[in-house]
Image 1: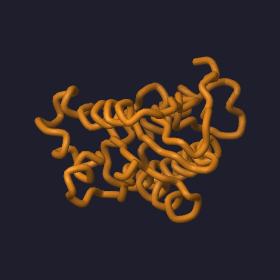
Image 2: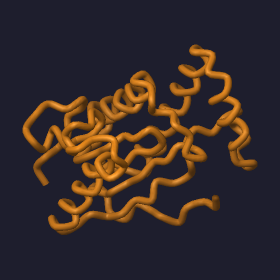
Image 3: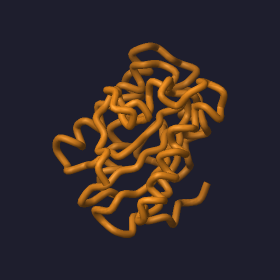
Image 4: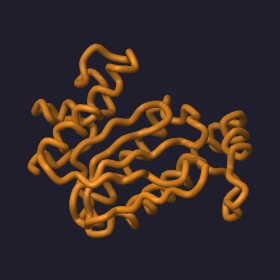
Length: 177
């Protein structure tokens, strides 16, 4: 896949972003790998003025709505940290097949690593009017429903749908926009 031409256009406005696991491999079927994602977001929330408005984590990709003073930098930090942690976890668990696939599907120009966890880019889309924010949140929250995983968005553990119903989710989100 060629490098993305998508760019964060306006900081610190909310953007809809997607992060896809390389070759759509199902890395997030284990709570431990999802926790790596959540821990990275928590770190950014506490240390980088990263504001998470909504998210869903599925087995091979995630969507989020986020803002920060430098969202491109924060997404790069997120992907770099989570990739290293996921690889370390897979090595610790001796997940040879997944590691082989992450090595096999690594792009030729990626010389700095033996594996490639994430596809390049995150396709940021600026969210300006409230109607677009509502549409993107609905898209995010209904993703597991459309896939047939759950009957209601709030039944998906790794989604901000619960937060928007006033129930504690697995990570805090900003609901005022």
